[in-house]
Image (tube, rainbow, N blue to C red; front, side):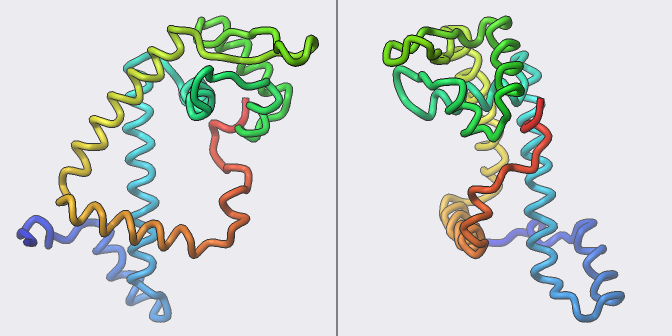
Length: 183
């Protein structure tokens, strides 16, 4: 059931009215969707930045430990594989690993299958920091998403999935255009 608050217009609605007048050929509904998704992405990024700052982490550390956690136990990967998965040059990867090792969040281990190789794994402190950040951010996001019913969440999820699939497949594998990607 929609409430009066759901029907309130906001600043974007006002801008869309101007765009409709100024650019008659503009598909206002599509523009509204794109603008709202981009705005929400900025809001979620800000929320994540606040969570990371609260726990003394940055996006680079969080992303790297997240990539290792995604693998499952024992959470180890070579620096080259990590660099490839994070779209970083070997120099940028080395610099990032040096910082995280100095901070006590990761450690380098000899690769038992390659005597010249190294494996990277999170330390106990790295696991704990990542888990604290992930838990806190999940709570923030759940609070935000509580504006929707469970049915609305499922519907929105399905619609967003359909929009994502409308992009060419190569978009999913392209290097991310995000400031976290460079050191």
